[in-house]
Length: 255
Image (cartoon, rainbow, N blue to C red; front, side):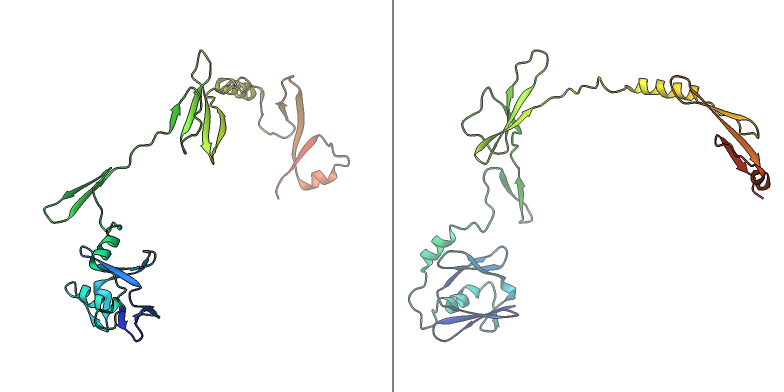
């Protein structure tokens, strides 16, 4: 709740829930928005907003105000019309001239269509104009448009390629030539990879592990064979082997 109180020495006290502010009479002027029941106070010197409050949240000299009496009560307080005024207040014509510079309601215009509904409400249809992403030109203009890509055609017979430019911070930024073709000659195709994998599967042969048998693994294109001996034995049998073959895999049975 905001309470605006008359004060001595040609001043007004605005009482907020957590503070009080003292201002001179005629320092502010106000506007009442009837459709929203909002009162806006503006600084007289620079027209900046000083305070915005609902009529229902406003008191004048501690008393509630209504839409019917808020203008007269505020005029008496803000402009000092109840006595002791300095004569420095705005006339109605001056106040209207000030408020005419402010748009407190949405008005129809370019890309904005207002339709009155039977309920008394207003339907607002607003459209955002489509902006061009790029423009094809034969040569760059002296000054470009921000956020617009300028495309200059490259002289190629088979494909359409363009050199891209952006106007940034008052200078032209060279974005290079867009290339939609990638040289994949150094990469395997899917078919080539599948064929290689099938060839590896054919050359990788693992036999069932049986004591005394061998596993033959063909790992290289040259066909080199790696033979590994694999034995299954008990711990005591393993311990009894005096010289163990480094190329042999010993599988110790779990007791």
